[in-house]
Amino acid sequence: MSRLLAGFLAPLLFCLGTSGKTVAGTFRSEAAWRENGQFITAFVFRGDGGLLVCRLDDPALAAQRQARLLLFQDPGLDLHSLSCTDKLRKAQMTVSLSRAEHNQSIPRQAPPTSWTLLYADRHTCQEDPDGSGDPDLTFTVLLLNPDSAGNPLDHFSAEESGLHSFFSFLLLAYFLSCCIYTGPLQRALRKRGPMHTALKLLTAALALQGGSALWKYIHLCRFSTDGSGFPLMGHLADFWDMLSQGAVLFLLLSLCGGWTLTRVRKAQSRPLQWEWSPASAAFSVGGVIAQGVLLLWEQLSEAEPEHHGSHAQQSWASVLLVVLRVGLAVLLASVLFWIISTERSALKRDFYLSFSRACFLWFLCQPVLVFLSGVFNRHQRQKVVTVGVVLCRSISMVILYQLFLSRSLYWEVSSLSSVSLPLTMSTASSRGRQ
Image 1 (cartoon, one colour):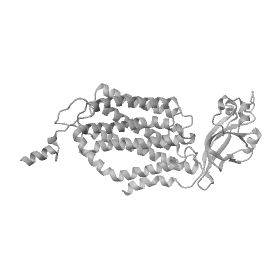
Image 2: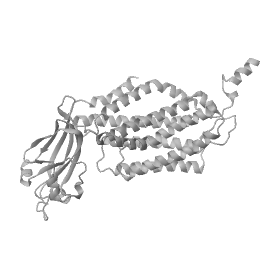
Image 3: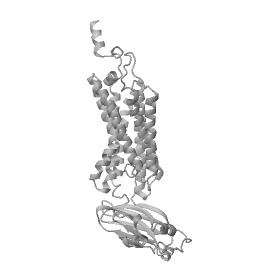
Image 4: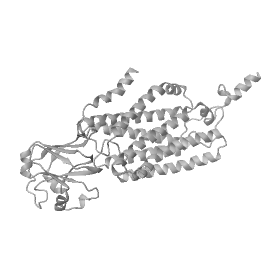
């Protein structure tokens, strides 16, 4: 127990101090000329007291180039369609760079608004730039929101605020559940019952999801101290989340494709086993591969991957992923509806109905939440989808655990002979007659 507690408390050691979002790199005249302004980053400021800090390694070179930062606030403005001169003219704020450090206050934001930050200099709008051979200008930009005391020390943008606390509570819930249910789960796995394979897959998926939350929490904690975090931890969290989704999808498709939820009546002397056929194997593996490819495409298609996850629907990969999950949900709904309508046992029907709820909750939570997030403000949509998806999938796994660990449903669903089970009504009556 002490080792488990130490492993849980270790990430908390990263959460010491506060700072702002940090963007470090180089200002390049060639990139600014080619793109009509070099894109630096985007940030959602909130409230009153936002601050932009720009630090330069060579302020003399910046003054020679007439370097400046352009800030655009209009969310409906298409910067790519503007000419170079129009882009410079439409900037809401311009920060001239001539000193080692510049501090620029951001006006009050109500509601929170995204600001886009570009770099430009005297060569940006020239037809034939003569500064292509100039050295790059190294910079560090801090983007700060006001904290609870009103001081500009919070690096999280408005669309990310609160995720840090959510993952801390999520990890606490995982830790408490692990302390309470690890023993009973180990005993159930040692029994090697008819749901043994399903329980192993479900446990692996839940462990991967918990690991993903842990890496994401570590990344957010470090991000809160220096504004950059552990990018490797963020990518590792996304990868573990992909593996968890693949394990659950494989489990659900295999169950509906040929195991337990089957129309073939088995012998009463033995439980149902995980059965494979070419069709069910191709269906399950193909669904997992398709989801994995779309998830990887979704990650690679993001222009600037963020640490808060990849649940926002902003690319064709995301749209196709939603279509895939809705299609699989409709397909499984038709199969389960046929099974439920033809099943005579009330207990089995209850099992199938609960199983259906878990399936639909897992498949449809993301599409439904993406649709419902449209009623929220722009800066709240990402948080609604991210938090909602994690909670819904966790609830779905809990429902599946309750089904697979239920001893009475073991007996009904696996069609075990009543003689092989102790303390059933038939054995008790037969012993009474003896």
